[in-house]
Length: 441
Ligand SMILES: Cc1cc2nc3c(=O)[nH]c(=O)nc-3n(C[C@H](O)[C@H](O)[C@H](O)COP(=O)(O)OP(=O)(O)OC[C@H]3O[C@@H](n4cnc5c(N)ncnc54)[C@H](O)[C@@H]3O)c2cc1C
Image 1 (cartoon, rainbow, N blue to C red):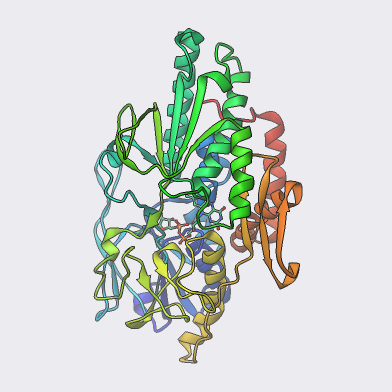
Image 2 (cartoon, rainbow, N blue to C red; image 1 turned 90 degrees about the vertical axis):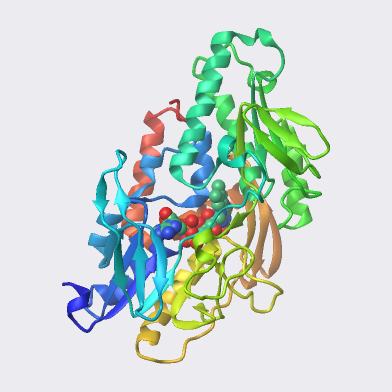
C-alpha cells in the first residue's frame, strides 16, 4: 500500500549500514509487519556489506559474495520498503527527503530524482575517510570505504604479485610495496591481515616471490603512536606483533602528498609504493554540512541530543558515524564505531514507537565494551570493559578472537535472527573447506 494514501506513520531511514539496516529490520518486525507504521529504507547501494570486514576483502581473506545482503530480499522478508538512491537534500518544512537520480553503468537512467515524505526521519549514512586536504589522495590512494574499493585494492595487489613473480626476484628488495596511511584500528588490522594473506597467496604457485623479502608493508602515522584512540597497552602489544610480522611502522610521519609512485612525508622523505591505502580518520559527507539548517560539527556530523534527535528538529534523528552523539558521563562525543551504531539502532527500535505516540524518549547511553584489534586469524589483542568483566580486563589470544568475531555475529543476529545466522555460519565454514584460503583473483 502506498504510504502517501493512508494515515499510517511514515518512518524513513536513510542508509542501510551497520546501524541503519539493523534499525529497519527491527522496525519492520515491530511496526511494519503489524501494519502500525510504514518503514522505508533509502539506500544508494543494492547490497549491504558490514564495513568492519572491508580490510579482509582488501586482503582477500573473505569473499564479498559470501557476506553481502540483498536489500530487496531483506526488505521483503522483514516488513520494510527499500528504495534505491542517494539522499542529497532535505526539506524540513515539507518533511521530504530529496533523492538523486540513479543511473546504470552506461549512464542510462534507472530512477528519476524523487522525494520521499516522512513523519520521522533517521539519517544513518555513515562516514567517508578524511584526507585532510592532502594532495594526490583522491587520484592515487585507495580508501577502504566500499566493498568495491576494497575489491579493487585486492585485484591490484594480486596483479602486483603476479607481475613480481613473472619478473623474478632478481630486482632487489621489496618488489611490491604497500603503504598504509593511518595507524588507527583500520590501518593496523589491514597491515596484519595483508601480511597473512600475502604469505598465503605466494604458496599458491607464485614461488618466485619471497613474501618477507619481496613484499614490503609500511604503516604510516602522523601522530606519535599507533592506535591513538586505544589504551597504550593495546598499542604496545599490537606494535610488537606488527614488528614480528615485518610491518615497518613510521610514527610522527605526516604525509604531505600521495603520488602515483608512493608517498611523500613532511620533511622530504619519499617512500616508494605501488599501492597506497588511505585509512587516516573519518568525517561525514560534505552534503551534510548545510543540511536544511540542522546543526553540524567540524566533521560535518549532525549534532544530536541524548535521545538521538537532532538539536533543531524533533522529527529528525541521526545514528552511527554521521551523528555526533554526546558520550554521557565522558567528555566529547561517541566514537565512530560499529558497536555504537549497533547500540543506537537497538535503542531507537524501542524508542520510535514511543515517539510515534508522542511519549517522552529515554536518553541513549553508550556502553563501551572495550576495544579489540585483530592482527590476523589467530592473534587478537584488546581490553574488555563493563560490569560483566568487573572493570577493565586485558584479553588476547583465542578468547579475544572470539569476542572480536562476536561483534559481527551480533550484527548478523540483528538482521537475520538466530536460524539464518546459524545456517549462514555453517555454510561459510563448509565453503572454506573447498575454496582457497585467500582470494586469488
Ligand atoms: C576497515 C574498517 C574496519 C573497521 N573495524 C571496526 C571494528 O573492528 N569495530 C568497530 O566497532 N568499528 C569498526 N569500523 C567502523 C565501523 O565500520 C563504522 O563505525 C560503522 O560501519 C558505522 O555504521 P553506520 O551505520 O553509521 O555507517 P555504515 O555502516 O558506513 O553505513 C552507511 C550506509 O549508508 C549508505 N549511504 C551513504 N550515503 C548515502 C546517501 N547519501 N543516501 C543513501 N544511502 C547512503 C551507504 O551505502 C551505507 O550502506 C571499521 C571501519 C572500517 C572501514
